[in-house]
Image (tube, rainbow, N blue to C red):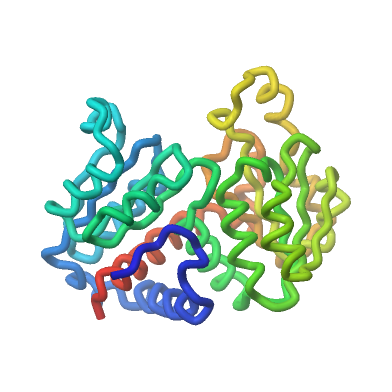
Length: 304
């Protein structure tokens, strides 16, 4: 039995197999319509979510399976004091696979230690969001056709952005990838990420506060929002929330084949005027998320 707690739980070869399965699903939807018939996915979301929860739901339904669970911890026994470990044990009696989002880092890992069914980390605090990473990788695969020989810029909240941390770790396993880290001083990538994922692997990276200066060399621009829910001080959030706003004018110096990505939700860090630009890929990302989650569910349930 396998779980997905961190993107690096899968080898590069396994990720490539997932990509190929997702691409086959995209091309042959009817072939997979009954792949998980009779199987149940439990979505345990202790934190608000629109895209991730509905993407998992749609993925399981399009595989012919069923979905149960909760979208608010207040509607579960956690409001009575039940532990994650006990919840995992209980849900294992009702479902075949769990997708868990939790505000505390490490909670899905704890669940995986006590569940008797596969557990998927659907986001745990500021730590990791592996299925978003798989979504991002599928988007890069479809838009660029490769994972190596790329310059990828991460812009915005690089301190608390779990999608950023996860994607840096995933992309650090490929050849000749350069990282450009664009953020205000207060929201820089944590030192432990730089040390373990970049410096320890002798990967090239630069840190800058200027999106405009970085733009011309980027193959991929990964925008993020400044996350209000990660701040303890409202004044700090207000001061930093508009640090970077991508507009059509700022794209004048960008490559013609730039791929603009964003894990969503967007607040105002990408102008709606950019949506019409053919380089905008963030809504394609949403669709890719459903297909890669379909492939992931099949893999963890060992469905051929």
